Length: 239
Image (cartoon, helix red, strand yellow):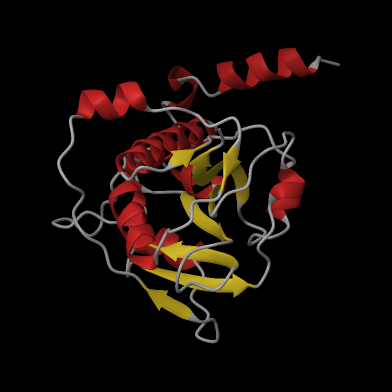
């Protein structure tokens, strides 16, 4: 029996491009609409909050990149409001203004297997709870009143206004790219996280990219087709 380490390398080998050249679906493509209809949350009984957004004042990209910082400890900001949250979501993970089928980050085959959920704890004019972000209509859909995520953390000192959850539907990408689809899901999550970190910095917030957490604590909050792969709490750097 192979060790866990050997299995990791074997998976990497099997998902190499040469192994996938003859995958039956590499020349086909599902539309963004088809994929999202399969896994997005559109229950008419769930309450929806339609968001607005504004442009962010021009800033030097080199300053944003160099000043980006991962907060090791965090406290809540006093004044995140619904317009600021809408602005953050629009420019980090929303749909493009001139190309509604594309989002603000790259995705292999424009499949967009990653979805954004939010644990809202303290945002003006938004009730605390667990939400899904629908980028197609720039809205939040409330799933439950559950506003906890801290029991999934392996670290202490994170007290955020919002925690963004990046959750992936691996099958969407694997249907087109076979085993390599899993790689693409993880790469896409990295693009999303970097957008969020830079936008948080641009808005004067702190963010903490967390890849080490108790998976099942978060996964039980999600549609069973989705798996959490990244947490991005947002607040203020603790002194």
